[in-house]
Image (cartoon, rainbow, N blue to C red; front, top):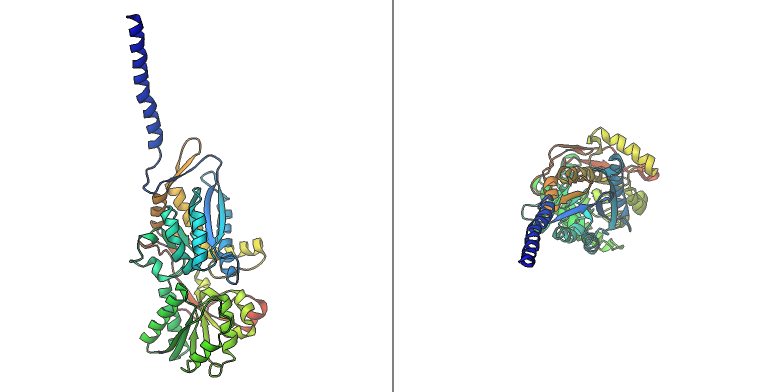
Length: 414
Protein backbone atom coordinates (compact mmCIF):
# COMPACT_ATOMS: atom_id res chain seq x y z
CA UNK A 1 0.00 0.00 0.00
CA UNK A 2 2.80 2.39 0.85
CA UNK A 3 4.42 1.65 -2.51
CA UNK A 4 1.11 2.40 -4.35
CA UNK A 5 0.63 5.58 -2.30
CA UNK A 6 4.08 6.77 -3.27
CA UNK A 7 3.36 6.14 -6.97
CA UNK A 8 0.04 7.96 -6.77
CA UNK A 9 1.72 10.87 -5.05
CA UNK A 10 4.39 11.07 -7.77
CA UNK A 11 1.74 10.97 -10.48
CA UNK A 12 -0.29 13.68 -8.78
CA UNK A 13 2.76 15.88 -8.41
CA UNK A 14 3.61 15.33 -12.09
CA UNK A 15 0.08 16.06 -13.23
CA UNK A 16 -0.13 19.24 -11.20
CA UNK A 17 3.30 20.33 -12.44
CA UNK A 18 2.45 20.03 -16.16
CA UNK A 19 -0.29 22.66 -16.26
CA UNK A 20 1.87 25.18 -14.39
CA UNK A 21 4.70 24.60 -16.85
CA UNK A 22 2.44 25.05 -19.89
CA UNK A 23 0.71 28.04 -18.31
CA UNK A 24 4.04 29.72 -17.80
CA UNK A 25 4.96 29.26 -21.46
CA UNK A 26 1.58 30.52 -22.61
CA UNK A 27 1.86 33.57 -20.41
CA UNK A 28 5.26 34.37 -21.88
CA UNK A 29 3.89 33.97 -25.42
CA UNK A 30 0.77 35.96 -24.74
CA UNK A 31 2.83 38.89 -23.49
CA UNK A 32 3.93 39.40 -27.09
CA UNK A 33 1.54 41.19 -29.46
CA UNK A 34 -0.40 38.98 -31.82
CA UNK A 35 0.13 39.98 -35.44
CA UNK A 36 -1.07 38.12 -38.50
CA UNK A 37 2.19 38.84 -40.32
CA UNK A 38 4.36 37.87 -37.36
CA UNK A 39 6.64 39.83 -35.10
CA UNK A 40 10.27 40.92 -34.98
CA UNK A 41 11.95 40.26 -31.63
CA UNK A 42 15.01 42.41 -30.86
CA UNK A 43 17.04 41.22 -27.89
CA UNK A 44 18.77 43.65 -25.48
CA UNK A 45 21.71 45.39 -27.14
CA UNK A 46 20.76 44.22 -30.62
CA UNK A 47 20.09 46.84 -33.31
CA UNK A 48 16.85 47.91 -34.93
CA UNK A 49 17.56 47.05 -38.55
CA UNK A 50 16.28 49.35 -41.32
CA UNK A 51 17.11 48.25 -44.87
CA UNK A 52 17.45 50.79 -47.68
CA UNK A 53 17.20 49.85 -51.34
CA UNK A 54 18.55 52.66 -53.48
CA UNK A 55 20.43 53.01 -56.76
CA UNK A 56 23.99 53.67 -55.60
CA UNK A 57 26.04 52.63 -58.64
CA UNK A 58 25.98 53.48 -62.32
CA UNK A 59 24.84 56.56 -64.19
CA UNK A 60 21.89 57.30 -61.90
CA UNK A 61 23.75 56.74 -58.61
CA UNK A 62 23.45 60.35 -57.45
CA UNK A 63 19.71 59.79 -56.94
CA UNK A 64 20.34 56.93 -54.50
CA UNK A 65 23.36 58.47 -52.78
CA UNK A 66 21.29 61.61 -52.20
CA UNK A 67 18.50 59.67 -50.47
CA UNK A 68 20.92 57.45 -48.53
CA UNK A 69 22.48 60.57 -47.05
CA UNK A 70 19.04 61.84 -46.03
CA UNK A 71 18.48 58.64 -44.05
CA UNK A 72 21.94 58.85 -42.48
CA UNK A 73 21.32 62.40 -41.23
CA UNK A 74 17.95 61.32 -39.80
CA UNK A 75 19.70 58.51 -37.89
CA UNK A 76 22.20 61.00 -36.47
CA UNK A 77 19.41 63.39 -35.48
CA UNK A 78 17.83 60.50 -33.59
CA UNK A 79 21.06 60.04 -31.64
CA UNK A 80 21.70 56.79 -33.54
CA UNK A 81 19.37 55.02 -31.09
CA UNK A 82 15.72 54.11 -30.85
CA UNK A 83 14.05 52.82 -27.68
CA UNK A 84 17.47 52.14 -26.21
CA UNK A 85 18.64 50.10 -29.20
CA UNK A 86 21.20 51.16 -31.81
CA UNK A 87 19.83 51.86 -35.29
CA UNK A 88 21.38 49.75 -38.04
CA UNK A 89 21.02 50.88 -41.67
CA UNK A 90 21.95 48.52 -44.50
CA UNK A 91 21.87 49.44 -48.18
CA UNK A 92 21.08 47.25 -51.20
CA UNK A 93 21.63 48.56 -54.73
CA UNK A 94 18.33 48.42 -56.63
CA UNK A 95 19.83 49.71 -59.86
CA UNK A 96 16.79 51.81 -60.87
CA UNK A 97 15.41 48.87 -62.85
CA UNK A 98 13.17 45.84 -62.38
CA UNK A 99 16.02 43.32 -62.15
CA UNK A 100 17.81 45.36 -59.51
CA UNK A 101 14.61 45.93 -57.56
CA UNK A 102 13.84 42.22 -57.50
CA UNK A 103 17.36 41.30 -56.41
CA UNK A 104 17.53 43.96 -53.69
CA UNK A 105 14.08 43.12 -52.31
CA UNK A 106 14.82 39.38 -52.32
CA UNK A 107 17.97 39.91 -50.27
CA UNK A 108 16.19 42.19 -47.79
CA UNK A 109 13.23 39.81 -47.47
CA UNK A 110 15.56 36.91 -46.63
CA UNK A 111 16.83 38.72 -43.52
CA UNK A 112 14.41 38.22 -40.59
CA UNK A 113 16.05 41.02 -38.60
CA UNK A 114 14.80 43.72 -41.01
CA UNK A 115 12.01 45.72 -39.38
CA UNK A 116 11.19 48.10 -42.24
CA UNK A 117 12.63 49.26 -45.56
CA UNK A 118 13.17 52.66 -47.17
CA UNK A 119 13.12 52.71 -50.96
CA UNK A 120 13.11 52.24 -53.82
CA UNK A 121 14.21 55.27 -55.83
CA UNK A 122 12.55 54.25 -59.10
CA UNK A 123 9.16 52.97 -60.16
CA UNK A 124 10.48 50.00 -62.14
CA UNK A 125 12.37 48.74 -59.07
CA UNK A 126 9.33 49.33 -56.86
CA UNK A 127 6.95 47.35 -59.06
CA UNK A 128 9.30 44.38 -58.97
CA UNK A 129 10.44 44.59 -55.35
CA UNK A 130 7.53 45.78 -53.22
CA UNK A 131 5.48 42.54 -53.55
CA UNK A 132 8.52 40.52 -52.45
CA UNK A 133 9.00 42.67 -49.36
CA UNK A 134 5.33 42.66 -48.44
CA UNK A 135 5.12 38.89 -48.76
CA UNK A 136 7.81 38.84 -46.05
CA UNK A 137 5.79 41.33 -43.97
CA UNK A 138 8.22 44.20 -44.50
CA UNK A 139 6.63 47.59 -45.18
CA UNK A 140 8.62 50.02 -47.31
CA UNK A 141 8.38 53.78 -47.72
CA UNK A 142 9.91 55.46 -50.76
CA UNK A 143 11.42 58.94 -50.76
CA UNK A 144 11.53 59.32 -54.54
CA UNK A 145 9.42 56.83 -56.50
CA UNK A 146 6.66 58.98 -57.98
CA UNK A 147 4.96 56.31 -60.12
CA UNK A 148 1.14 56.84 -59.93
CA UNK A 149 0.11 53.17 -60.25
CA UNK A 150 1.70 51.92 -57.00
CA UNK A 151 -0.62 54.06 -54.86
CA UNK A 152 -3.69 53.81 -57.10
CA UNK A 153 -6.85 52.40 -55.47
CA UNK A 154 -6.63 49.35 -57.77
CA UNK A 155 -2.94 48.72 -57.07
CA UNK A 156 -3.64 45.25 -55.63
CA UNK A 157 -2.82 43.63 -52.26
CA UNK A 158 0.83 43.04 -53.17
CA UNK A 159 1.40 46.78 -52.73
CA UNK A 160 -0.46 47.22 -49.44
CA UNK A 161 2.88 47.51 -47.64
CA UNK A 162 4.04 50.44 -49.77
CA UNK A 163 4.06 54.14 -48.87
CA UNK A 164 5.93 57.21 -50.11
CA UNK A 165 6.91 60.69 -48.99
CA UNK A 166 7.56 61.77 -52.60
CA UNK A 167 4.86 63.40 -54.70
CA UNK A 168 2.64 61.50 -57.11
CA UNK A 169 3.45 62.13 -60.78
CA UNK A 170 -0.20 62.85 -61.47
CA UNK A 171 0.74 66.24 -60.03
CA UNK A 172 4.21 66.68 -61.54
CA UNK A 173 3.15 65.92 -65.11
CA UNK A 174 0.21 68.31 -64.89
CA UNK A 175 2.39 71.12 -63.50
CA UNK A 176 4.89 70.69 -66.35
CA UNK A 177 2.09 70.95 -68.92
CA UNK A 178 0.65 74.05 -67.27
CA UNK A 179 4.06 75.73 -67.33
CA UNK A 180 4.57 74.96 -71.01
CA UNK A 181 1.15 76.31 -72.01
CA UNK A 182 0.67 79.20 -69.59
CA UNK A 183 4.21 80.50 -69.13
CA UNK A 184 6.10 79.54 -72.28
CA UNK A 185 3.01 79.91 -74.50
CA UNK A 186 3.92 76.89 -76.62
CA UNK A 187 1.19 74.98 -78.44
CA UNK A 188 3.07 72.02 -79.97
CA UNK A 189 4.92 69.51 -77.81
CA UNK A 190 6.50 66.07 -78.11
CA UNK A 191 7.55 63.63 -75.39
CA UNK A 192 10.32 61.07 -74.98
CA UNK A 193 10.26 58.26 -72.44
CA UNK A 194 12.63 55.36 -71.78
CA UNK A 195 10.13 52.54 -71.33
CA UNK A 196 10.32 52.68 -67.54
CA UNK A 197 7.00 52.89 -65.67
CA UNK A 198 8.13 56.24 -64.18
CA UNK A 199 8.91 57.94 -67.49
CA UNK A 200 6.06 56.38 -69.46
CA UNK A 201 3.37 57.35 -66.96
CA UNK A 202 4.82 60.82 -66.34
CA UNK A 203 4.90 61.73 -70.04
CA UNK A 204 1.38 60.31 -70.36
CA UNK A 205 0.09 62.64 -67.63
CA UNK A 206 1.90 65.57 -69.26
CA UNK A 207 0.44 64.78 -72.69
CA UNK A 208 -3.11 64.45 -71.37
CA UNK A 209 -2.94 67.75 -69.48
CA UNK A 210 -1.22 69.54 -72.39
CA UNK A 211 -4.03 68.51 -74.73
CA UNK A 212 -6.65 69.40 -72.13
CA UNK A 213 -5.22 72.92 -72.01
CA UNK A 214 -5.51 73.28 -75.78
CA UNK A 215 -2.09 72.13 -76.97
CA UNK A 216 -1.15 69.56 -79.61
CA UNK A 217 1.06 66.54 -78.92
CA UNK A 218 3.05 65.90 -82.10
CA UNK A 219 4.68 62.64 -80.99
CA UNK A 220 5.27 60.37 -78.01
CA UNK A 221 8.46 58.42 -78.67
CA UNK A 222 10.41 55.83 -76.68
CA UNK A 223 14.11 55.10 -76.27
CA UNK A 224 15.98 52.52 -74.21
CA UNK A 225 17.79 53.68 -71.05
CA UNK A 226 21.02 52.26 -72.46
CA UNK A 227 20.74 53.97 -75.88
CA UNK A 228 23.51 56.39 -76.77
CA UNK A 229 22.51 57.37 -80.33
CA UNK A 230 19.31 59.36 -80.02
CA UNK A 231 19.42 60.87 -83.53
CA UNK A 232 16.92 58.46 -85.16
CA UNK A 233 14.25 59.26 -82.56
CA UNK A 234 15.06 62.98 -82.59
CA UNK A 235 14.93 63.10 -86.38
CA UNK A 236 11.51 61.46 -86.24
CA UNK A 237 10.35 64.02 -83.67
CA UNK A 238 11.56 66.89 -85.85
CA UNK A 239 9.06 66.03 -88.60
CA UNK A 240 6.25 67.12 -86.29
CA UNK A 241 7.88 70.51 -85.66
CA UNK A 242 7.47 70.56 -81.85
CA UNK A 243 8.26 73.77 -80.01
CA UNK A 244 8.73 71.90 -76.75
CA UNK A 245 10.09 68.44 -75.86
CA UNK A 246 9.30 66.86 -72.47
CA UNK A 247 11.80 64.14 -71.52
CA UNK A 248 11.12 62.78 -68.01
CA UNK A 249 13.95 60.26 -68.26
CA UNK A 250 17.12 59.64 -66.26
CA UNK A 251 20.60 61.14 -66.19
CA UNK A 252 22.63 59.19 -68.75
CA UNK A 253 19.99 59.04 -71.49
CA UNK A 254 18.94 62.60 -70.72
CA UNK A 255 22.47 63.80 -71.39
CA UNK A 256 22.56 62.10 -74.79
CA UNK A 257 19.16 63.49 -75.83
CA UNK A 258 20.08 67.00 -74.75
CA UNK A 259 23.42 67.02 -76.58
CA UNK A 260 22.17 65.45 -79.80
CA UNK A 261 18.97 67.51 -80.06
CA UNK A 262 21.16 70.50 -80.93
CA UNK A 263 22.51 68.58 -83.94
CA UNK A 264 19.16 67.65 -85.51
CA UNK A 265 17.68 69.99 -88.10
CA UNK A 266 14.39 71.44 -86.96
CA UNK A 267 15.08 70.99 -83.23
CA UNK A 268 17.78 73.63 -82.76
CA UNK A 269 15.32 76.00 -81.09
CA UNK A 270 13.10 73.41 -79.41
CA UNK A 271 12.71 73.99 -75.67
CA UNK A 272 13.72 70.97 -73.58
CA UNK A 273 12.32 70.04 -70.18
CA UNK A 274 13.30 67.17 -67.93
CA UNK A 275 11.86 66.04 -64.61
CA UNK A 276 13.20 65.10 -61.18
CA UNK A 277 14.84 61.90 -62.48
CA UNK A 278 17.68 63.91 -64.03
CA UNK A 279 17.73 66.85 -61.64
CA UNK A 280 21.34 66.31 -60.61
CA UNK A 281 24.81 67.77 -61.27
CA UNK A 282 25.59 64.44 -62.92
CA UNK A 283 23.20 65.48 -65.68
CA UNK A 284 25.39 68.53 -66.28
CA UNK A 285 28.39 66.23 -66.59
CA UNK A 286 26.48 64.18 -69.15
CA UNK A 287 25.05 67.08 -71.17
CA UNK A 288 27.81 69.67 -70.79
CA UNK A 289 27.07 73.19 -72.03
CA UNK A 290 24.01 71.98 -73.93
CA UNK A 291 22.26 71.77 -70.56
CA UNK A 292 22.15 75.58 -70.36
CA UNK A 293 18.56 76.72 -70.76
CA UNK A 294 16.93 73.36 -70.02
CA UNK A 295 13.98 73.31 -67.62
CA UNK A 296 13.23 70.75 -64.92
CA UNK A 297 10.13 69.98 -62.89
CA UNK A 298 11.15 68.98 -59.36
CA UNK A 299 10.22 69.48 -55.70
CA UNK A 300 10.01 73.13 -54.67
CA UNK A 301 12.82 73.45 -52.13
CA UNK A 302 11.88 77.07 -51.39
CA UNK A 303 8.57 75.85 -49.91
CA UNK A 304 10.17 73.36 -47.50
CA UNK A 305 9.98 73.86 -43.73
CA UNK A 306 12.42 76.05 -41.82
CA UNK A 307 14.42 73.04 -40.67
CA UNK A 308 15.50 72.38 -44.24
CA UNK A 309 18.24 75.04 -44.05
CA UNK A 310 19.69 73.30 -40.99
CA UNK A 311 19.57 70.00 -42.86
CA UNK A 312 21.50 71.44 -45.82
CA UNK A 313 24.11 72.87 -43.43
CA UNK A 314 24.53 69.45 -41.79
CA UNK A 315 24.81 67.85 -45.21
CA UNK A 316 27.52 70.29 -46.29
CA UNK A 317 29.47 69.70 -43.08
CA UNK A 318 29.16 65.90 -43.21
CA UNK A 319 29.71 65.27 -46.92
CA UNK A 320 31.56 68.40 -48.06
CA UNK A 321 29.02 69.27 -50.74
CA UNK A 322 25.42 70.26 -51.33
CA UNK A 323 22.75 67.59 -51.90
CA UNK A 324 23.12 65.74 -55.19
CA UNK A 325 19.49 65.25 -56.23
CA UNK A 326 15.96 66.33 -55.24
CA UNK A 327 14.86 63.76 -52.65
CA UNK A 328 17.25 63.98 -49.68
CA UNK A 329 14.66 65.75 -47.51
CA UNK A 330 11.99 63.24 -48.51
CA UNK A 331 14.35 60.46 -47.39
CA UNK A 332 14.91 62.21 -44.07
CA UNK A 333 11.14 62.44 -43.55
CA UNK A 334 10.65 58.80 -44.57
CA UNK A 335 13.20 57.65 -42.00
CA UNK A 336 11.67 59.77 -39.25
CA UNK A 337 8.18 58.45 -40.00
CA UNK A 338 9.52 54.89 -39.72
CA UNK A 339 11.22 55.70 -36.41
CA UNK A 340 8.06 57.22 -34.92
CA UNK A 341 5.92 54.29 -36.08
CA UNK A 342 8.33 51.84 -34.42
CA UNK A 343 8.20 53.85 -31.20
CA UNK A 344 4.41 53.71 -31.36
CA UNK A 345 3.96 49.96 -31.81
CA UNK A 346 7.01 48.35 -30.20
CA UNK A 347 6.45 46.56 -26.90
CA UNK A 348 9.39 46.65 -24.51
CA UNK A 349 9.90 43.98 -21.87
CA UNK A 350 11.63 44.69 -18.54
CA UNK A 351 14.95 43.35 -19.84
CA UNK A 352 14.85 45.71 -22.86
CA UNK A 353 13.69 43.19 -25.47
CA UNK A 354 11.56 44.80 -28.17
CA UNK A 355 8.70 43.05 -29.95
CA UNK A 356 7.36 44.69 -33.10
CA UNK A 357 4.29 43.42 -34.95
CA UNK A 358 4.76 43.64 -38.70
CA UNK A 359 1.17 44.46 -39.64
CA UNK A 360 0.91 46.79 -36.66
CA UNK A 361 3.93 48.69 -37.96
CA UNK A 362 2.43 49.00 -41.45
CA UNK A 363 -0.82 50.25 -39.94
CA UNK A 364 1.05 52.79 -37.80
CA UNK A 365 2.85 54.11 -40.88
CA UNK A 366 -0.44 54.53 -42.76
CA UNK A 367 -1.90 56.27 -39.70
CA UNK A 368 0.66 59.10 -39.97
CA UNK A 369 -1.19 62.39 -39.62
CA UNK A 370 0.14 65.95 -39.78
CA UNK A 371 3.77 64.94 -39.29
CA UNK A 372 5.82 68.14 -39.43
CA UNK A 373 8.65 67.13 -41.71
CA UNK A 374 11.25 68.95 -43.76
CA UNK A 375 9.08 68.69 -46.85
CA UNK A 376 5.90 69.95 -45.17
CA UNK A 377 3.02 68.52 -43.16
CA UNK A 378 2.69 64.85 -44.09
CA UNK A 379 -0.50 62.82 -43.82
CA UNK A 380 -0.77 59.34 -45.34
CA UNK A 381 -3.91 58.34 -47.20
CA UNK A 382 -5.28 54.80 -47.36
CA UNK A 383 -3.13 53.97 -50.37
CA UNK A 384 0.24 55.15 -49.09
CA UNK A 385 0.56 58.66 -50.52
CA UNK A 386 1.95 60.71 -47.65
CA UNK A 387 3.52 63.73 -49.39
CA UNK A 388 2.78 67.38 -48.93
CA UNK A 389 3.46 67.90 -52.64
CA UNK A 390 5.11 71.10 -53.80
CA UNK A 391 6.39 71.21 -57.39
CA UNK A 392 8.47 74.00 -58.91
CA UNK A 393 9.98 74.63 -62.34
CA UNK A 394 13.73 75.31 -62.51
CA UNK A 395 15.89 76.70 -65.33
CA UNK A 396 19.56 75.85 -65.75
CA UNK A 397 21.96 78.75 -66.22
CA UNK A 398 25.53 78.80 -67.50
CA UNK A 399 26.64 79.41 -63.91
CA UNK A 400 24.87 76.22 -62.77
CA UNK A 401 26.75 74.17 -65.34
CA UNK A 402 30.07 75.89 -64.64
CA UNK A 403 29.82 75.26 -60.89
CA UNK A 404 28.07 71.89 -61.25
CA UNK A 405 25.32 73.01 -58.86
CA UNK A 406 21.60 72.60 -59.49
CA UNK A 407 19.37 75.67 -59.16
CA UNK A 408 17.70 75.82 -55.76
CA UNK A 409 15.00 78.39 -56.44
CA UNK A 410 12.18 77.73 -58.92
CA UNK A 411 11.46 80.27 -61.62
CA UNK A 412 7.78 79.29 -61.67
CA UNK A 413 5.33 77.43 -59.49
CA UNK A 414 1.62 76.70 -59.94
